[in-house]
Image 1 (tube, rainbow over the protein chains, first blue to last red):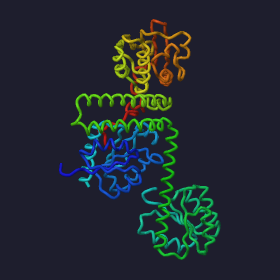
Image 2 (image 1 turned 60 degrees about the horizontal axis):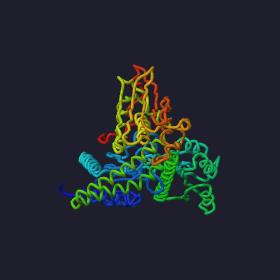
Image 3 (image 1 turned 60 degrees about the vertical axis):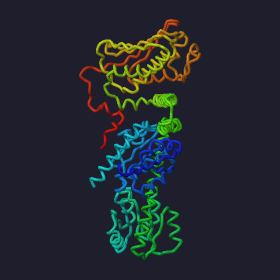
Image 4 (image 1 turned 180 degrees about the vertical axis):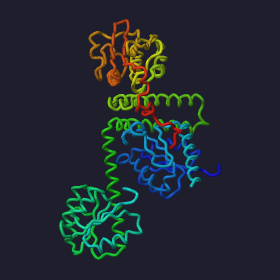
Length: 138
Length: 387
């Protein structure tokens, strides 16, 4: 691989992000933000290859707010999002139990905390490829 | 907010309406106009604009009155007043009436553009706050989601670090240490799974599971339930066997919660049967019903305990020995089975064993796939499915 992919993680639990970091740092560059506001600002400033996103942060489901904003933004829409949440099963309720979750951006997926390293790396690779293809197509 | 913000201008002067429209021509707005307060209010109620520009001095109902009525229509509407007499008093009065800001006449195109942009930003914030509040309320209604989050988060953080540490130290750990890591991860994984199972069961809402009813083939459900309990049985050197008599008709239901119900019964049987004992799960079709039995050769349940068995938090006195549990399992099983229009019963002889019997209505032949029932409706998303 030529250059390391740039990943960003927004999750308000520093212990959790620490656990993710030690799995990913061997393979990727990872910037971590513990509040939605700083995270969104960073996303708008730097071109990331993938976002790892928590749902329940701060005042409520602020992760969803970020995903929604990304969906409305032509550039951020192309950044793949891997949602990692401890309320995977409940997310459906937030949207009237239609789909498990609506798609905010071109490529997103939902995993439940905690995530097995193998599964985590696999889904990240999958989304990175999908994201790269999306960008080539444009 | 819609991609193209909608702006309503209420003013009796054509020159103001025209010049505003001219200024907005280059912007990506949808502009709607009204010549008096009455029409303006109608438009506002019907279109719910993102921003309203309203003249204070108009024939008919005044701008002040319009402001008051706007708040009645929708308190989240953002209004900016255009005031001909640019006195502080009228502006302050308008703000008191709920206006977001004021624009004194005459104004330059830039002034109008700037105040409009600020008004729309305010609207965006208002809508965002509403969405957040709505989601919070929804979560509050979904008590299980909150509890699930609170209980799972610390466990997930610990587990994620076990995963991470094991990955980081991969080259340095001895085999024995790796094995200990694996055991820790296993134990914690069990705990997380247990929390999830209990919460799911506690939050079983009859209406909710009915929404996802589909024809369920029971043998896989039985196999899954037996498999779930198997590790506990193995630890106690017990055997759990399943005996399915002949082809079983499908039942209309939810495979997940039916599995849960069976796991509870089999798990209980394993728990309250001495080491080396035997648990048998039998399934058969009988007179339009599917009958599922979970029988053990354990200590049995005293006759006086039997009637209370399916109540919340009930634990039979004779079982108050070394076994732990919240005493919710049977109550949940009953709730799940009843949601499936079935019954659950128990028969027991002290010293000989206990048999739980679930009866579920069999689905009539020819109705295997009723319209509107998608078996995948309640399933989780396939990781490979990208839309």
